[in-house]
Image (cartoon, rainbow, N blue to C red; front, side):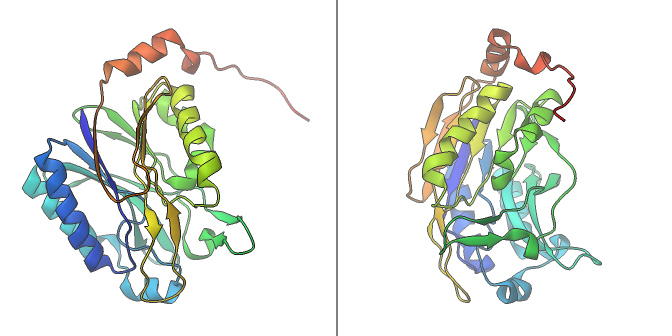
Length: 277
């Protein structure tokens, strides 16, 4: 299974981001990728709710998604839109942070809405209240591809191990963690958490990331950590893309999932317990 991770520095302009991503997808297909993964909020990185209200659309009307579908169909490439910021259907007034898997015919094969909201104060200068603008999802999602079953997640989900255990026990062989990770927490937490999720589940972990300082027409500019990563089912770092934008190609040997689980079959060792009180 040959995968391409796209590390990008998206702006708050969905049309410009689509043009940039479309070119990278063409290059990924030329390098033999079968599945290309985009990071979180690939269509629009914005800290300004009014701007988001102006430029974001519902899924059925979203030009960025339509462009990805056309590109996937034209290239014969599966594409994981790591997530898109989208308007929700009424009566929900908050946006959706939605991961969409597009198959090589351009059809949406799976969709997942981010469940865990990033409501934190990293420092006096870096505060996020994702739940103020985005509605949390309520359902874990497993997606079937010709090569492997994918467990879908988004960024802050990474800190909640029970989600990944549930996905792996349901059949996931690859865990997808598209992100726009904070530079305040990234240096300490990003790689260890990704490795832990791989080790706990015996899955490959694919984590395409936003990177750099994101151009903004409105509101405050956001900064993200980068370091897109691929982790093996045994916890080895197979890729660290650093902080530059671009494409990383990695070949996955899916037999390594079964091999890791034979060595350490922890997914079958759950026990019920009482307490604590």
